[in-house]
Length: 359
Ligand SMILES: *[C@@H]1O[C@H](CO)[C@@H](O)[C@H](O)[C@H]1NC(C)=O
Ligand SMILES: *[C@@H]1O[C@H](CO)[C@@H](O)[C@H](O)[C@H]1NC(C)=O
Ligand SMILES: *[C@@H]1O[C@H](CO)[C@@H](O)[C@H](O)[C@H]1NC(C)=O
Image 1 (tube, helix red, strand yellow):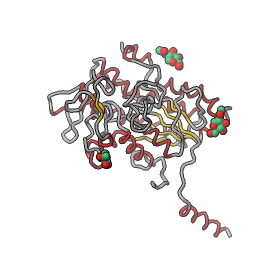
Image 2 (spheres, helix red, strand yellow):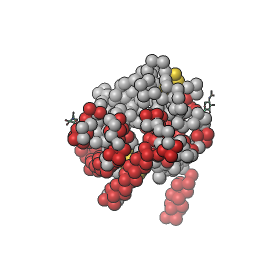
Image 3 (cartoon, helix red, strand yellow):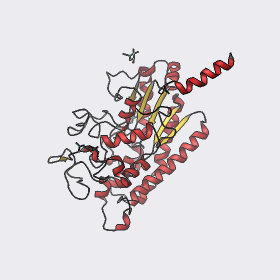
Image 4 (tube, protein in one colour):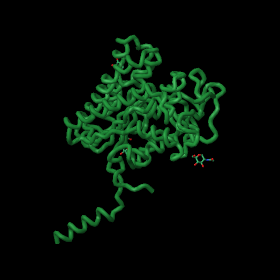
């Protein structure tokens, strides 16, 4: 009898459609890479590909978090500041222009004028904590609910570094921010663990030196400043690389401290780097370094003073051939590929839908 049951159990693990996840809710924290409407700036052509209107998303359509929500069977995540929303299946605390570090850090360095918003990791986790009663009710119910939820914390950091760089600070000075930024991310993750999170994904920084914004604003005549195979700006990618190395180390430390918590790194860097090296593999026939929606022409179709949706902009004919949407953010097509890399591997390991096959 026991043998038969054991056999049936074994069989069922092979025969049952290795069905999906068991998450009850999805929570996201971050910046303009993942804001789904907390900041409602922008107008068409933002949103043109999927929504037919601007939603606050910094893209022509869906973001990585939207594809993750859809593939997990969730509704698109409501922004956390949408009062009328029902957050029982999750919420998105990401904020356009959010920095990881708070006001004081930038103020001490004479950079407070570069901050647009008050939405550091600390503030976003605060907002999450304040919303908990409306998400899951009493503290014990919340422990149960959050214990079955997926948390994605990031990416964070891009705006901390760009705020200082755009203020004319040297990359050497900005590099000294890295341990502070990583520490703030790690603190945020630890606070979420304290509130009951057990399954957390932490994305690293993108290879910012491959984005038209950086390529244009920091253009030099010295070919040694650029990767030979990529055309990306080496020094800016080195900053991302350093951030990611320190972030991974701090996740390892957290993992040692909380061995039962699932903490996964999401590797934006390698994936986007592959877009640059092998664009045709993904249908990015325009290459990865040229902006789809722009005004500037030039090598990267980017002009800081006349951007996508400023007067006179044009949108490329086929948006799926581009990685870059507006020089800073990516196209829906690129987000789809990235989401696949997290959901089905290999850029989150184990992938979010580890046991599912793609249909
Ligand atoms: C929110 O939606 C859930 C089902 O998804 C439902 O059980 C709950 O009652 C709703 N809460 C409110 C306040 O409408
Ligand atoms: C940012 O928001 C937090 C709480 O939401 C508040 O305590 C803090 O004073 C705010 N900081 C600034 C500079 O507005
Ligand atoms: C647009 O580009 C994608 C990716 O390269 C390609 O698969 C598709 O066929 C193109 N669509 C049109 C209408 O050319």
